[in-house]
Image (cartoon, rainbow, N blue to C red):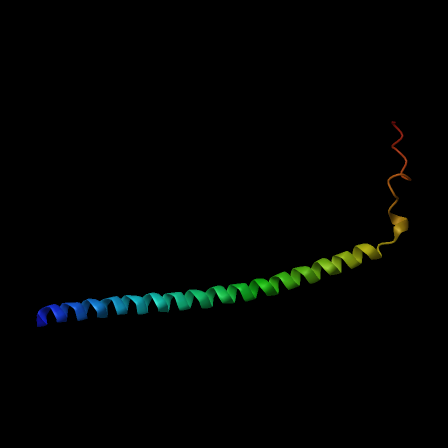
Length: 78
């Protein structure tokens, strides 16, 4: 009977070691993913600011340089 108890204890210890190993890998993965999400948030903010800057530049273009489509005369070969 003592032999059975020893085997059961060993199996439980092996399972516990495996679970602890899995937990360590999962913690590392969670930290890596968290860092990636934080970096992506910064990238999105930079892209949004660049888009706002371009939008402002486009709105500041002098309207006299761009004719509306209805004012633009067709090419001479028409």
